[in-house]
Image (cartoon, rainbow, N blue to C red; front, side, top):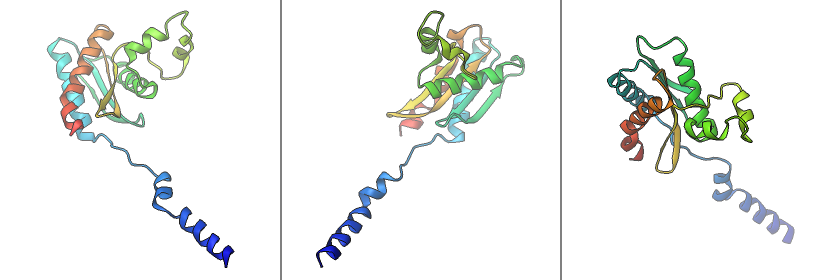
Length: 164
């Protein structure tokens, strides 16, 4: 009788809701529409500044959601923009910051030789309310600071939408 009671208690403990919750989790995902809104805002910010760029937005898994290329952006720009977004997302740091810690002579300089790592300005994480939703990458403006400014404009365009 004692063994039967012990077995029943063990079975109940294993099937409790808290155990089931440990086996799964929920995440908030950015929609393609939000990604498109961010990309369009970044592209427009660069146009207003006189730059022809490409903008890419990746989701929280680093997979592309949106890529826009302005008509005179260079042929390299889409790939570089996508890699900047991927780099910011996977290292969970904006690429301008990554530039500082991966420079020549720095302990993390070897990261620059990793495939797809793009350690110069223009890649930024998209976060809101403590959640990392993805990242945006901009390529084609004259320098990382200008790419960053356009990426920030893209993030600002969807910040309130993501916080709600």
